[in-house]
Image (cartoon, rainbow, N blue to C red; front, side, top):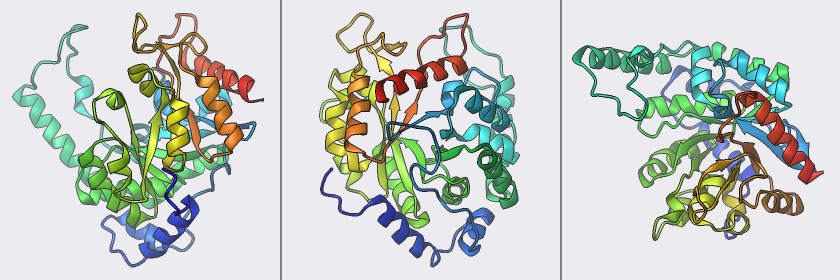
Length: 340
């Protein structure tokens, strides 16, 4: 935005100082507020491989086709050379002991068809699961979160975002989300962008001395859409800018957007896509085979030295002889070749 004079370090420090005066709702949040030796959030660059001074990491969604779990995530990081993550919360909550959703066992509809409405029995199972999940979140053991953090620390992997997407949760569960992310060493909790989500999460982010970062899909192609009203809500509101969705839906150069909003962009999902006028339009591609000006953006970040996390989000179709771990490694090498 250019007119925001409060630095990231300054915002985090100011908000953290105010945190001690806040009555927090969950056992983990209370432990974080009262324990002086709680894990400290690392500065950008404390973790992660940098190429030419640019932080390249990945969102763990990239490995959604692989076996889940934190131990597996760490294994994939070691195989790809990635050690800076936007961590999807499902793997983390699995490790923390969350109940398993019964929806995993519901019959799947044929490809291309919508899932039918839940039966009475299925709805009852989901209602019980949601109640159990809420109880789990409000009673999670801080020591278990510390154990999860230690797995990553011991492997030399930093978590800068946890994507809980908690805007529709209860206030107590939102407290849990921010406290858990902070205990994991992250600076931010991620959610999909919307007016209601920004309004709901911004006060919690400020209270916890963290950021709520908002991810876009194709909203920029909608007439009149702007992030300015969202960013005006609070300094704790930042962007998780998806350059691929931006370019694929609008055809506009994402580097121009980043130049304007660099001080309100926490992280960027990097990928390659076709533009909106190409056939097929707005389609994920192997890096270098699409039209997204990826190299221009990488070199802009390098030249300006902006402290923005760049995370590989693997979404293109994977060839039968490969897998998502190999493709993330190839994408990281592609970025390295541009930056070094």
